[in-house]
Image 1: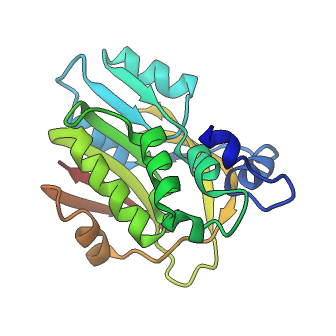
Image 2: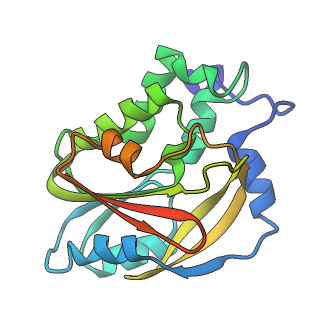
Image 3: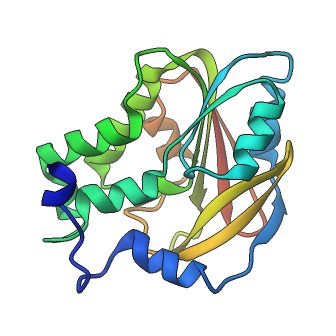
Length: 221
């Protein structure tokens, strides 16, 4: 099986497991989010929508979204990244392996075209190699319905050697709790112009820059 073939070598560094070990000792951080506010404002008058949450299964997120009358599909994209590209070889170089890429996209985004009404992508896109990043964003565009919204976060410090990884828990329509999962070097630095190019197949892109150097991006399909 593919999972067995790419099972992580416990002696090798691991994006997901390293973050998990660090995060297990850290305390959650609470913060307001303009991006989250925009996302939920866009669906406040809707019911029975299908929302993708790539932070992994979280009781907080499940309870909040289902309480609004929507369905939630939870995938831990950070864990799938490790399953697909960790283990043998270099993590970034492995992202150019077509078979591994196909596995990653199938495990993370295996939904019919135009079947989802929103996606909470959080901060993982910034750790993907350029080729895999574009394929992932293109696939997100395919599975989202027109006029739906996508929320993603990108760290905005241009010279940062590494950026924190978080598990995101929804505390309310305008606030969330962040549980640290360690540090990882972003694949590249993203400014507003590069993000507009990344999401060029979407209808619109809006940015919020926070005090803690986090660029919140709300994208309309």
